[in-house]
Amino acid sequence: MEDNKAWVCMYLVANMALFWITEAIPLYLTALFPVVFLPLFSILPSDKVCSFYFSDTVVMFLGGLLIALAIEYSNLHQRIALTTILIVGCSPRRLHFGLVMVTCFISLWISNSAATAMMCPIVKAVLNEMDAQKIFAIYKTQEEEPMEEGDPPHPSSISMAFYFGIAYASSIGGCGTLIGTGTNLTYKGLYDTRFPDSVEKIDFPVFMAYSIPFVVVVLITLTFFSLQITHMGLFRPNSKIGQEVKKGTESQDVVKTVIKQRKQELGPMSCHEIQVALLFILMIFLLFTRKPGFFDGWADFLNAQKIGSGPPVFFSVLLLFALPTQYTFFKYCCGKAPFPGQSLDACLSWVYCHKYTPFGLCFLLGGGFALAEGSRVSGMAKMLGESLAFAGNMHYVLVVAMCIVISLFCTAFASNVAICNILIPIFFEMALAIKVHPITLSFPSALACSLAFHLPVSTPPNAIISGYSGLKTKYMAVAGILPTFWSFWCLLITGTVWSMLIFPSSKEFPSWAE
Image (cartoon, rainbow, N blue to C red):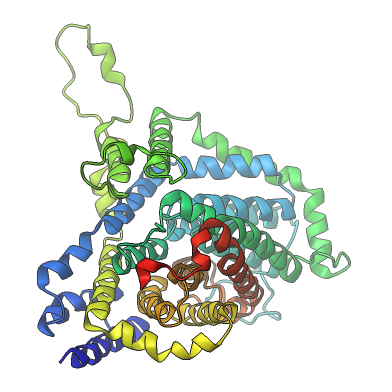
C-alpha cells in the first residue's frame, strides 16, 4: 500500500507539472490541487495540508510584498533610482551601468516584477530624450526589422541593451536576499520542511553571504559587460553602434538635464518617504539580528517559543498601517475646539494593498510546500532520489553541475516557483541517496530556478519588458545565451567552493540526514 501511495503521489505531481507548464488553468489554482487530492489519496490529513498555505515562510513572503508596495506607494523607489543615476553619470555606457546596478539593488528588497515595472518608464524617458536630441536611434528601421502595419517600431540594439539590462538585473538581484523573490522563500520552506533537524539553517544573513558574492556581484558585472559587447559596441569603436554610443557620450549634459528635471518634479523628501525608509531599515535590521549565528540575536533571548522570520517582517507592516503620512494633528494638541474631523492617511493603504498584492503567489508557495511534504510522506521523493543513485559513481562537482543545468533548462519554460517546487525535493532525496550534504546539491539549483533569460514566459521581468517595449522573442532568446553561460559558472563556483566557506560542515554527509 505504501508503495502505491508513492505512485499515486507521482501521478499528482505529474499532473500539477503539466498544468503548471501549459497553464491550462491559472498557476495559482493548480497550486491548490494538494488541498483536494492529498487527503483524498489518504497521504496527508486536511489540517496538515492547509497549514502549509500560511506557514511562517509564506507570511514572511506576504510581508515582503506589502513592504515593497509601501515603497512604491510613497514613491521612494523613483527617488532612489534617479539619485543614483545622477551620481553614476549620464553617458550611454554609464547610464546603462547605473540603471542595471540600481535595478539589481532595488530587486534585492522588492519583487523582481515591481523592480522591472518601476524601471521601464525611467528607461523609456531616457531613451526618448536620446531620440529627441538625435543622439542615437532608439528604434530599428523598417528594413532592419519589418513590422506589421499599425505596430510600433522595434527597439534598436542600444535600446534593447537597456531593457534586457533591467530585466536581467531584476532576476539576478532577486537571488541576493531571502525576500528578493518567491523562489528563495520556496527553497527555505522546502528545506525546513524536509530537514527540520538540520544544523545548517537557511537564515537571512546566511542566505545573503551565500548568494551575493558570485551569484549577484560577479554575475551582474559579467552580464553588464556581455550586453555592452553584444548590443553597445564595446571594444568596437568604429562600428555603427560604437559611433552612436560615442556621440551619446559627448551629449550627456542633455540627459542629465532630463533626469534632474524628473527628480525636481518629486520635490523634497516627504515625511511619508522618510517613515517608509526607516521602517524598511528596521525590517532589515530585525531580520539580520533575529538569529545571526555568529552572535546571540534577539530571538535567542525571547526564546520561550520559536520565533520565525514572519513576525519581524509583519511588525514593520503593522507600523506602516498605524503611522500617518504627516503629523499635522500636533498643532491641535494644545489648541481649543472645534477640532477638524478629517481622518489622516496611513503610510500604507489597505485598498492599495488589496488591489496590487498578488495573493495568488501565497497559494503557489503553499502548494509547493504541501506537495513536497506529500511526496516525502508517501515515499515518492525517496523513490525518485534512489533511482538517481547512479550519480553516486560521479564526482560530486559533476553532480552539482548536472543539477544546475537541469534547473536552468527547466526554468526557461515555466514558472520559477513551480519548477523549484518540482525539482528541489527530488534533489534532496538524490543527495541522501548518494551521501552528499543536501545543501551542496540543492542550494545552487534553487538559485538557478530564478535565472531565466531566454523567453518572455520564463520569468515576470522578461514578460514585462517584452510587453512594454514590443521586443520580439528571437532577440531575447539570443541575448540570454551569455548571461545563462555566466550563470552556470557562477552557480558552480558558489555550490562547490563558496559553499564550503559558508557551510564548513557541508564537506561531510551530516549525521542528522542519516
